[in-house]
Image (cartoon, one colour):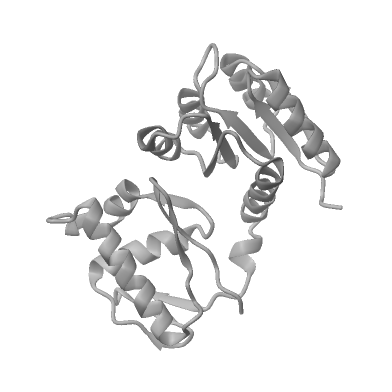
Length: 227
C-alpha cells in the first residue's frame, strides 16, 4: 500500500470527481473534492494538500488562474485535467505552473500513475536515485555515463533544463527560455532539431538510452533511464 497523501480534486463535473475520489481512496490516499476555483484557493491556503488535481474549466476561478495563484505561495505538485486538446490550452496549463496534464477522456489508471510519479518527484525519490550524468556548469559541459558529451552551449542549457526536473513536461517556449543569450535564430523547429541531436548524442554512449520523450503538441520530457 502506498503511503497516504492528502489530495485535493478541483473538478465541477461530479461524475469525474467521484471517479477520481474512488480511485485515490482505493489507492490509500485521503482525497477531497471541490467544484469551485475560489473555494479551492481558500482551502489550499488553509490546509495545503500534498497534490492538486485541477480541471482547466472551473466556475469562480478557472484552472489556469487558480494554478498561477497557487504558485505564488506553494510548490504543491499540480496535475491539470483538460477536455480542450488545443496546443495553446496545454501550453497555458504548463506555463501557469502545472507539473503535468491529462486530456479528457482519460484512463483513471493513467491518472493514478501520474499522481504517483508526481508524489515521488515531490518526495525527492527521483532526485535521490543514482544519476548517469555529471554537470559542469562552469565549463558548460556534461558527462553521460562517464563520457563527456560534445554539446553546443544551447544544447547544454536545454539538456540541463530537462534534467532539472525528470518526468516534467517542458514546453518548447520553456526550452527556448533556457537558452538565455542564444535565442537568435532559434525557432520551434530548431528546438526539435536540437532535441534530435541530443538524443543522438546520448544514444552514442548507450544505444538504449532513449530518455527524451516527445509530448505531442507541447514539448519534451526527460525520463531517467534504467541503471
